[in-house]
Length: 213
Image (tube, one colour):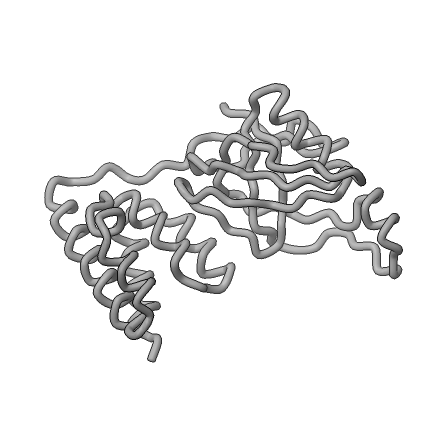
């Protein structure tokens, strides 16, 4: 089992190998950031299934910065990684970078207050067959071609897509990293995150891209 500190954020679905910057202001999550850094513990950032409790009263900025506003039920599958503190402001707010490196699945809550710590198990892809790699590479090329078509006229984006980074990225990593280039609904991203075969992810992304006029 792997223990992680859990940061539930509605509509925040993150993928391995895609670092994400976050602005942290609630006191319990500021404590969680310091805990993760001081104890070398990974932070998991997950989409939420529903709002369990919310404070509906209009709050002042001071109250917002010093109180916990909402509690959410976390999605069971999420990405996690080590935390880097980028900036801490005078009022305690923080800007952090989470370097997502793995997918995990919730198993048992170890701590509720002042923030959640969960015991989790790795959430890994199914084992690939030799023939899978050929199809994966073909689908990667189709996705890149479609992105080039959609971005026609944007020379900067065209140059990035045609560069070595994207053209040579291994298909398994590509199936996660490419999500940073595409705007999509949170539920769609969560479904992608829960898929356990890179071909499933690439096929779903290609279908989405083909639906764009």
